[in-house]
Length: 157
Image (tube, rainbow, N blue to C red):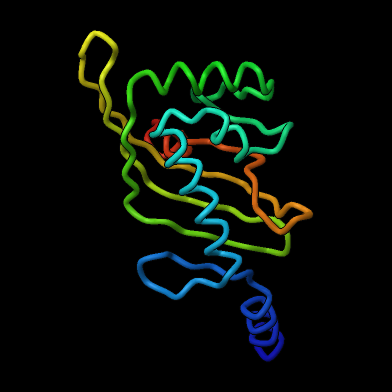
């Protein structure tokens, strides 16, 4: 029993910093990660595709559709530009940020509304899971961006 307690204490002390923006004070690293995600979202909503692309490492992977990763930067830029045509407005239901050294995970439930060019209303939602890496200049950029992480929760078990 003594060994189990010691193991649990060691595990608890080794767990990386975790925070939800709404319930706890974030470390500077966690806030920087959250700011990187929020900047990308703001750029996307503002149709600033160059700003969106600057949020990603050059060899990043984005899942625009579940199970279909895209790693080609030119194709990613085209996909973001096409999606921006619906004038998306995003809302997050919360943020969880986990940082371990130079790697971070951002997890957030999201909803999006928009309109197609012909005026049709759109509404989508999901669970965003993004992996970010600290850059040599101290900034954070996305390496993997999966806005469809929640799809596994709704599949028949």
